[in-house]
Image (tube, rainbow, N blue to C red; front, side, top):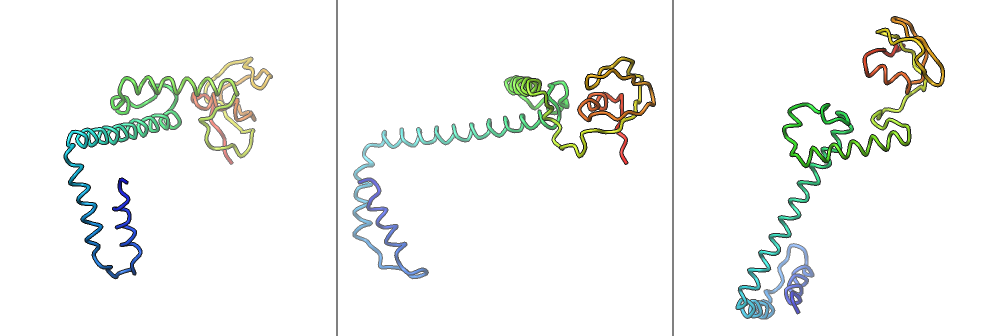
Length: 180
């Protein structure tokens, strides 16, 4: 059988005392070499086998490369933003066209999911308190509906709002969170 004698040689070597050599098993080695000599006649078979194994290895390397890049692109959606135009120009230049399409589709799938569950998954830090105190930096307007209630967000006014309602205005620079 293929490899059985070679396996016996390895087991024999392994069964010896650590750091001590066993007697050289020339008989078993010669039997294995004789088999190897007989099978080298079919060079085409081994050439094809080596070529096939090389292709499989190369395919695995390419798949690892693509997988790791896709993972990095997914992380960009979480760290930088879900829009392609939000990505810095130096990152966009490094993406191929299919990678840009993948980023768009991944981002749209995330946005679709977040809109269906009504939850912003980009906010990775859980809030300590669901309500925050904010100060209006710019006139937002009157009659703005926040948590099913109308509110007047005049400039420099302070409000106690749900964090989820205020985050939209904070991200746009219209409000700031007051701490302390």
